[in-house]
Length: 374
Image (cartoon, rainbow, N blue to C red; front, side, top):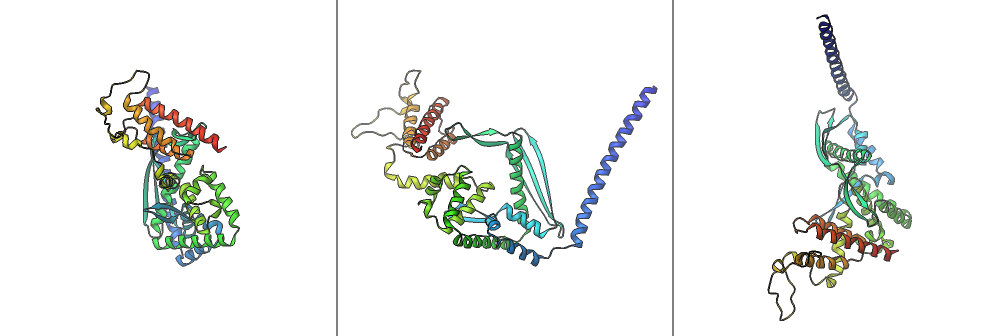
């Protein structure tokens, strides 16, 4: 009995200690929150002074080029304020409380939340995002990418990138839209003036290095621009600076600029070189017939070949796929087209055996093109 009483008393003391620790933590949190609001009340921001400081900051070319991004929408370039600009606005304006938290972390998905509060007006903005714990990695020498599970470092970088995007959006909710647009316009003007005065050749080389570090090469840029990179104008360099920021910050995928966009231009130039039948035409059930000849049966009703080869329908798909791949002269085009096919594999009813054959052919084609480039 005595032992049981002692154990009961020990448990009560432990519980009391925990309760006291919780109460102390809550009290400290309340004190910190009250201190934030009290300090904001004592030192309110001067918005005119803040505006002047921001405008002075974007007069520096090195900072101005980081203040905006761009992305394509309906054949137009849309410009917006970057994460760097949002961070500078929060620093200069002051009295913003930024709270970041991981809401859930289950399986291969993580959900995060950011809340920004204006301590002077008590106005707040919240934003939530969920993302898969996956990153893209290149496979071997082919340059083909696939989604893989993240390690600890990749997960930390992925989480911080999403936190930064949500924080930017919340901060911009606290500031008038006309003010952000004005700062973005001033930043672009500063960059244009700097480019006109600076060594244009040196800036082009700097751009090439920055794009190269992201796996975007001179050939990709020239396809996007529609002319040789050596003839890039100051306006185009300004636009490319915005593209760099948008890709770095994850606003857009680089394929929006150097995937489908470049591919569309290339397809227009090769309109006359299209294969007689495309993969999409075969999938739609179209059959090419010679004059005076018609196929008596649909592809589905043709007798199956020997077990070692693919079914007739799959062979037709592969032949159409092969023509599409052989019509492309750049590794990037091959990769983008194969990526499209893989994404639509289920809808197109591509079997595993056919996909494996397509993959092997793509790898062989990429090796051939890479040897030619060297």
